[in-house]
Length: 411
Ligand SMILES: *Cc1c(COP(=O)(O)O)cnc(C)c1O
View 1 (cartoon, rainbow, N blue to C red):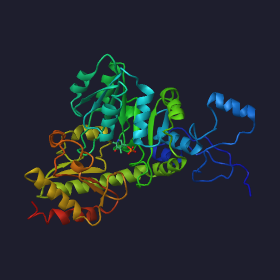
View 2 (cartoon, rainbow, N blue to C red; view 1 turned 120 degrees about the horizontal axis):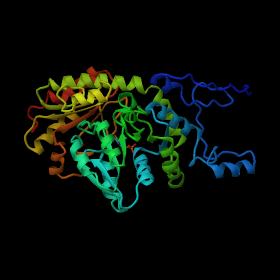
View 3 (spheres, rainbow, N blue to C red; view 1 turned 90 degrees about the vertical axis):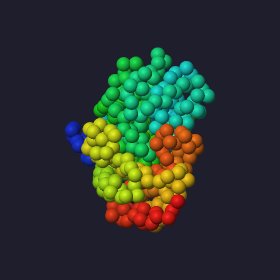
View 4 (cartoon, helix red, strand yellow; view 1 turned 135 degrees about the vertical axis):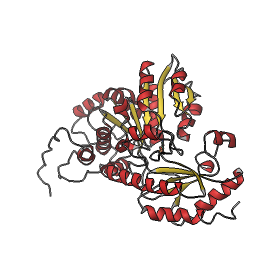
């Protein structure tokens, strides 16, 4: 039974971000479905050989899913609309997106400046894996703009920043870094996985590339891995699309569909994550067993004003705290006690999920560092990260209180 095709309509100009998240990038099929279709297909049937030849030659039109797939295209168009960039390109994961960025922009002899507080796998990919191919990397302070400026060399091609960082939620000044990059004739890329376009739009602040781990808030329900780069149409089509096509870090259409649907609820979810996290952060600050709380929306955060200016007045969904403790051994025992006393929170390594996740950075994300490196990074054995989900914040607090209130006698 076939419906006559539903004519597609051009969207009105000037739509708000919440509307774009729900309405952009729906190419309806002949069935007129209201929810976006999932095109779970790797190949596309061509009407005739001449058309096939034309599509292969031009790269336009759908031929094979490593080149493009309509569901993946919808995800890319919607994310670009939400980040305010001309275009986006999807990748198999956040790390796949960073790999794509490196392969698209850098060659042996080029130099990159990154913050030493970046995501651990990002640091490894630049400073270890790509050092093998002759890409030089300098790691600088997350928060000291002067160090970024001083690290720039004649062969610097890229500055790459992440804000806020994991787990201490350190914030860097995107506009200031964009100015440094552009003065040097380099590009600025920003990892926007923690903040999402709901809190900050790096492109509006001067970033040339916005990188995403769709695994986090964009999916938002802990189901699939995904990644993306957003930027100018020229960067996406000339520098990145040819790499995905040949190197194959392509996003699966199923994962693209899950994340595409996740984008529709991103704004309401992220605002709720922020509200819940602020409640938990304030409560943690009032607990006598807690020595320090790291959360950008608390006035005690060292970059509170910059964060509020840059992040839409909200603090994000991750709060980290440090237990008052003596030796590293005692601190670890106390942190493990608090984490293991939870009956609701998940002990896992993800964030941006509806389910609150509690983790011990010193033995997970920062587990491969020496104790001295960990302390330099501020990640002592007494540090606990909470990626607050969408449960009632009172229940999250009660779960953390179980361990905090029974700490006497632990180490
Ligand atoms: C998770 C994460 C990544 C890597 O993304 P994957 O989808 O896990 O590959 C990169 N940057 C940040 C800030 C992240 O949290």
